[in-house]
Image (cartoon, rainbow, N blue to C red):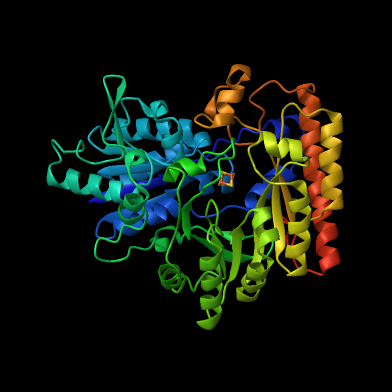
Length: 472
Ligand code: SF4
């Protein structure tokens, strides 16, 4: 069966840049973090006996000027003529994904259109349009495999109602099958997360090998691996934990090692989890095994600052095994702000974690959430904190009430922009306390400061890194 999997583009709507063309740092920094659509590689892995293609329109849209994604997908469909089209969706992808489904159905009304990804868990109703046939709500590997099997068995009248984890638009309303949120941790782990089916299925990374996913500052290829599912925390701005019903499910070390051994051609491997270090004992075994088996990559990991502070011994092992960069959500510069975000952490931990990681030669990437209610003093406090605590890269996201998160409930009455194209973390979708132009000027200033602080850091540490966007 011919199956086309699409990572839709995130529309380039960026109010910082609209107000301040000199804020090119925003774009530069986005390029540094361009990575593969692992969820689609993963789905393709369980569809290995089918004819599958992956199109990364996010990558193409971010790399090609004047990219017309609807025309591009029309061409792709004309050439490949897929029987099933699967699209993965975060919130900022929603409108692009719907447009893609319209292009597909205009070309071939019989092609089955299937939507998955985080936004289907957060607000599945957004996909209740006639051009979408099925909504995969939650983990997609087993569900997508079942969809393909049911469609092959009876294309005229496939039995989708017996497949758990689906929503289907019927006469303007969604009809649901048994939902994954009803399942136990054991069922999620064995059937939907790992999905063995007599053998282990790893992501099919070859299907995106024509895209150049590189860490630009090092000019090295990167690919992602998943080592755990979910998160036990409940930060109020985040919906990731909903994917696994609030469970944390680490993957067996033997399985991770087996998969990493298939990734020789990628010098950099990013462990792209909601929370890589949710089970410290297992993390230690993982890093020790990587060393014992002589598996050599540079690793990028995601970690909480309190985990760094509590488990410096484990990080020492991680550094020896090749961990070079730790990505952290710093989020805020006061404990009160962290508490309001439901982050259950402290600023003392942020500072301690930066120092601990740098002493181990693990470089920090940290993100700060910029509240639309910030005044001049708040921006100055963030700027001072960045200057006092320089890291490899400090990024900024505008606090965004994503539908389906607790923060949405807190902020929904203040929302002035409901167009989901704006929900890419660079735009304020509620009224800002400062005049809007001033708010974005201050955001642009933070980006510029972040670059200066990065250069200071690189010089101090004697690192040989290019500036993102810098020509040879
Ligand atoms: S922000 Fe991170 S720690 Fe908080 S709920 Fe989301 S994944 Fe978990």
